[in-house]
Length: 120
Image (cartoon, rainbow, N blue to C red):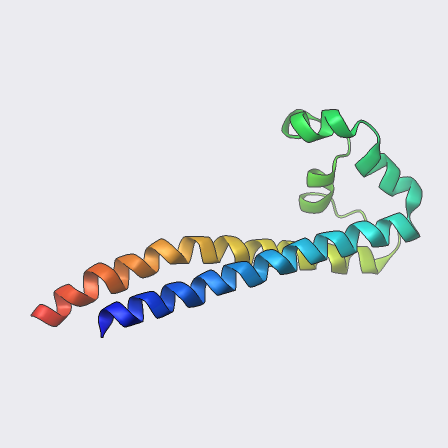
């Protein structure tokens, strides 16, 4: 019984991870397309200019880059939709990370603790 619960739970958590990974990918693409369409100058400045340097050394940069724009910036160019799209990306990312953390926790609880409690 507990072995079946272990694998069903692991499959459900993995499915949740995949769903949130797809949501994150789609939200990121939707955000990028929206910026490209509505704010082309800012899009170019954030995503295109110096893209190779931004891809490899973004944690050490002080200027605008895609990661800092998504995570730390509250800049919305006077367009509230930018903030909404940014919030969707953040939510999908947090849920994906939570699913990743939940899998080993689920194996620990159901795989190790429940059999010990059943034997008592």
